Length: 64
Image (cartoon, rainbow, N blue to C red; front, side, top):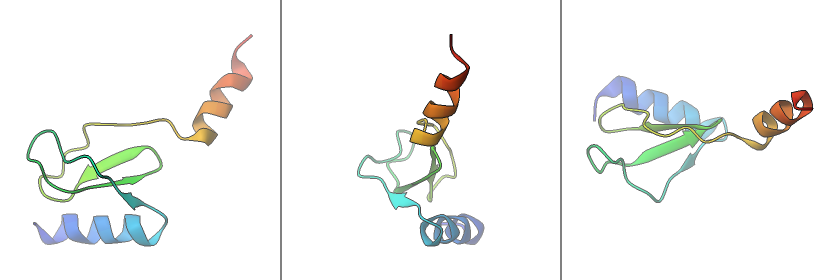
């Protein structure tokens, strides 16, 4: 695990991120989720982005 990815994952967890139970679809590594962004701490890919409740509410305000 590269040091810069480790540091990024640590910052994400310390600022409210969570570990995902699903492994990375590319390398099967551990992923961290924060603000809808899933970061693999092994390969660094971010294959999945899920909208957070805040993002969903903001979008719904603009829909007719």
